[in-house]
Length: 456
Image 1: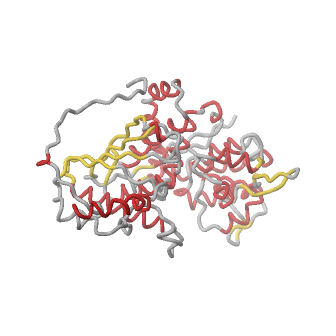
Image 2: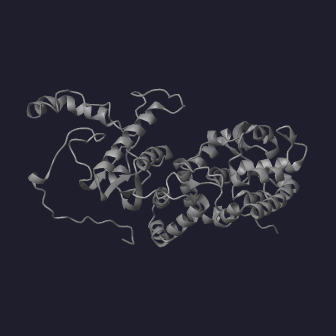
Image 3: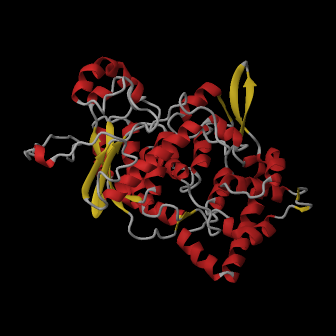
């Protein structure tokens, strides 16, 4: 209800033995047991990644129960150990190491088995059928596995409904003890081909959908609900919109796709901007989530203690190592304390110049600043920001202008104010030329609301 309270409603529908079929086996393969397109509703509660190793836990009880149960069900309880090869969990002991592409074998196996389960659910569902599942976790990696496999199996999320979870989960170590809400995801089979859409356009639609629920969110917050739970609710709304365009969400005119991980980071960013408006007002809207995390992390100055950084990044979906890998920050020491400090845009030139593609909005901004400082060489020629725009405007991200404006007046870029001013004016000219010469870009420019910022 509007107060966020749940109530149990008895169905009073009798369960008749003649209408029940109990199958003991793996849901990765139900062929020969359940016919195609024969089921109206699938309800499931997928495993939470590596939180619980169910088979090993079951063995503790099975070794005692196997003897009497094997007399009643000799085929099902022939062994004193539960079957584990098709258990859809992230088990590093059972699947150690990494594959040739650098992915952890445990995560690969979890994704493969979960996808097989979703595909079977897709096969047996009627065209108008519904699948509902509940899932809660405060780590992005767990959500990525579930969602990637769900979308690959051909489902879209039609609705995400928050319900209060079992209170007994709140105090123990099961699942995510910070999450008081579960989100029931209601899914349907994808019948139509997903339509292409720019992320900037989809983000607007998502914000409208989330804001339409603002009254309910405000009531939940007044009732003392933890911020993590509100983030879960908002995340559900984001995924509901994204699933309709899975695999077809473009970051820019070049068609670079948005991954599930990037969407989850964006969901965190959207939640942060909606729930902590006072702290986030100055940061441009719609920027890359990792860029937003960096600006939030170092909002008070160009350095922060490592301990404080770890705490501030908790729950953001981004780690210190991620920011270091991006080339944005580095380890340092100050007064005997380990710190994380911002790397100057000018100190990043060598790494930026070696990149085949400059993809993130902050990298594009730092590239622009370096070009406009002068004296830089890029691929054996003088670095030229205007030339780069003319050759790469389809890959230019719509937030470059607003970021240039934002960092001009703070520690993220104020030391290079003159170069930023040149970069900004050059960006205006470059975008104007692109609009005049490319009708497709002109239409995309309007749809994506590409900005150069407003100088004053």
